[in-house]
Image 1 (tube, rainbow, N blue to C red):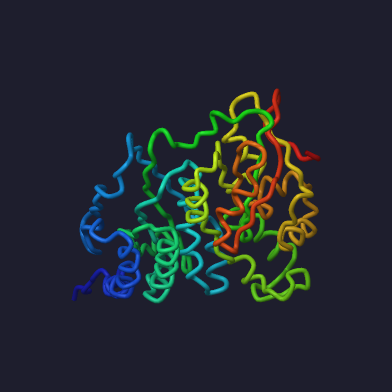
Image 2: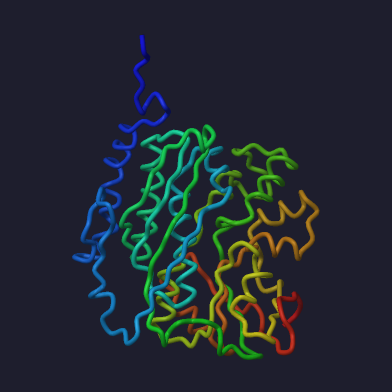
Length: 354
């Protein structure tokens, strides 16, 4: 007698996927309210339709800006802690931050979620986090893909990837091309590790340090490892739009992601220019000192692996700090300060007094 086989017996539960879609519809719909009439398709379409009519008004030469990114092995810590909503927020903030530094306004977001086994409550938590971050940033979550592939992902594995599309007028694209020696680097704080350096962080904290996910060492000032490591990636879209809309003459911006200050700041500097950064101008969150101590890591390596408390660097002429601070005053989670200077006849980043 032959054995009856169906998709579920092969490891894929179609009904679990359908239930996940049912759960996320209301969260996704919240992101469409701020784009009334522009989102022309709902969940379930083969593609997404977004009207650009209103978005392009007033732009002389519209340029489309796109980016994609994931959250790296922060997903492993998420699974350890059983906290998923913040990871959805991370995903939006990570990719949106990469285009806002080019002067773009993000419009739409798509996601890819890959699982060993779809659990509707986890999918809902992830999309709830994405939707909240999209609402903060004025982005429409227009679609995505949820895949259950037990032959590809090990049990408990989670893969999340985001895709963002935005627009900017060509004359307002921020490339850093007009940055000159003597310009100032202005820092805006991060909210913690964001989504970078987690392979090293996990080795330091869980392997070398032997900490449990719910441990609360004295250095963390009452917070647990889960609280600190899973702090959501700061969402810079609204404060940066406020800065740009105020007409402050920012020449370039760097999103401090993988590679830290050491590798991301030079990405916006013209050839022949470098930067000096004064580490005495800010104090990183305590988690960074704890990790440095655990691994006996030198300062430069720390600034290459982690953001060290600086999530965004803006470059412009001297004297902008008061105007920048005024522009982001309605966003109390952020502060801005003079971080360093641009130098001539050099390259890369060095640390020292400015």
